[in-house]
Amino acid sequence: MKLADLCPLPLPDEPRLPEEVLLGPGARAGLGAQVDARLGERPFRFGDPDTWRAADLGRPDWLLPRHPHADEQTAEQVARKAEGASGLVAVGSGTINDLAKCAAELLGIDFVVVGTAASMNGYASAIAAIVAGGLKTTRAARPARAIVLDTELLAAAPAALTRAGLGDLISKPVSDTDWWLADRLEGTGYSTLPGDIVERAYRRATAAAGGLMAGSPEAYVALGEALVLSGVAMVVAGSSAPASGGEHLLSHLWDMEALAEGREVRLHGAQVGVTTCISAAIYQRLIRIRQADLVPCKPWIEEERRLYAEHGALAPTLIEQARRKHARTEARLAKLSDGWKELRDEMGERRLPTPAELRAPLLACGAPASLRDLGSSRADGARVLRLARDIRDRLTVLDVAFDLGLLPGAADDLLVEAGVA
Ligand SMILES: [Zn+2]
Image (cartoon, rainbow, N blue to C red; front, side, top):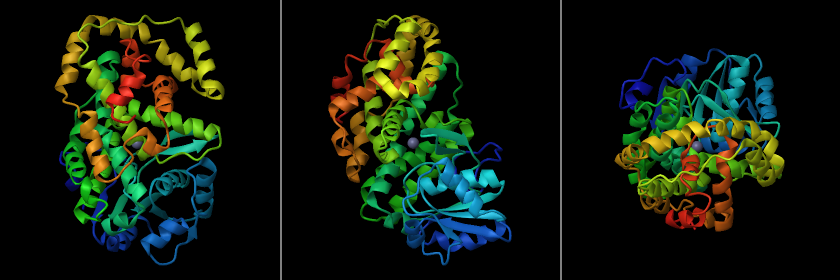
């Protein structure tokens, strides 16, 4: 169906949005017509050995090695292999979709994606997550012209991938609130449209989470729809902000540390499901704070010393982001001091899900719902909770928790209140 028919609200005229979404049992039967209509005479069909076998779509033009990484060199390799093609058919999930976005951008051609797992919300987003020079970066890239999500394929995907998709999805009400909070304190801009685009699908997908492991087609339709619309919300917002707040910073810090130490990163959505509960616990505390006792801003020279001491080898890569945010601290504290009561009341009116409400769908489908489930620990969780705000210029609930003196002192208690430690 047309994306406009999937979306509950009228969409702005935005050329970067996908046009067509085929979603349901057997949806891949419609792939040929999409390729003929959108990709010209010489489409280049690729995936990796596992995704291609799962999708069962005849002969590929080329397969990546098993377990590919979404990095710059691999995206260039895809582009070289596809040289002369009139379009790309990408078969896979997060990694393959990001590689296709970048390769299509490099070649100046369109692509169609056949999703093999409901593992993330990037199918419709205009951002690709790519590792460049050992660092996780996001870059603007046009999403697929058509997205094919066959629920038979999604249900046959490894359970961990589906669980990760649900984990990434549950962050939406919380990350949207971080986006709202940044606007209230720093005037960065906020619109209710992206949140409204996802809300109904979010409710359906989280309510249906218990059916995922039983292979219920309805549960996969609900999750696929919500993940696609979450990507659409980012395109409409012109930023990842409605889908990526403090809970994502916590996850990204783990990834940056793993990359720096040459370890494999964990599944993005698995981490985000757990960290979302932590952000939600912070919000529950904030809405109970009557009087704002603000922590004064430290001079930059002290902050810089702390950043080098605490982040070690990662410090040079994040120092500029931290410096930019630090430069705005005084102004933010003044706003918090003048308008805390009003801000707190508005925060309460947003009726954010509690950590227990967020954990319920995770538990219903066996997704990681605690630090231990991730192979982390309370001490490690408290550590990233103390440090994650440093890695990005974006204001989130983590910063406000420091401003109000909740962090770092209450880190352990917050992890318990989040139900993750
Ligand atoms: Zn995410």
